Image (cartoon, rainbow, N blue to C red):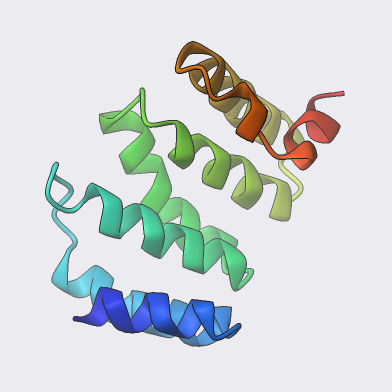
Length: 119
């Protein structure tokens, strides 16, 4: 329920509201598992979009460690690191994202900002 509320808030162009809902969702879904990985990744994304980069990393880094083949988490990590001006970490995350997207045949879906960061 809280996850759906956060999605609704984000779609209504209120990433800060979604991030606040993400706090509540994180309390409910703090155990990282196959059942919660999508929810937690979304919560990390909402935190990043709300410019709460440190909080985003607290959620996203464990996902990347446990699910190293989950492409979207590396895009979100790259964006969070970039928001903190941690350029080397952002580049490494974006590079992993590109590798995974290429491997899955989804290279055309890679956002331009990723290539800009890598060049």
